Length: 46
View 1 (cartoon, rainbow, N blue to C red):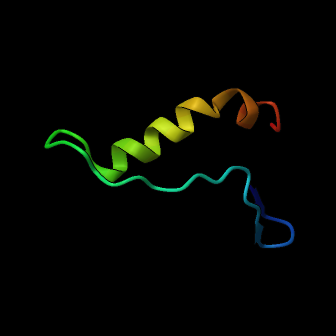
View 2 (tube, rainbow, N blue to C red):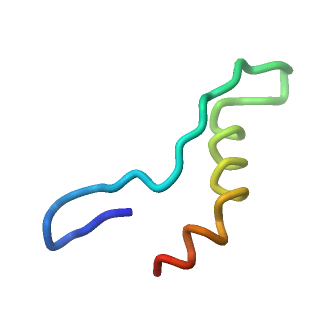
């Protein structure tokens, strides 16, 4: 989350990045999955 008035970014969720396990899996896919899993929590801040 970003506070544009104070030019500050806040961490809302953390998760350790797992090793890529297959040819069709990328880190970007892992990050998108993380956002999808935490979507409801992120939307409630808006």
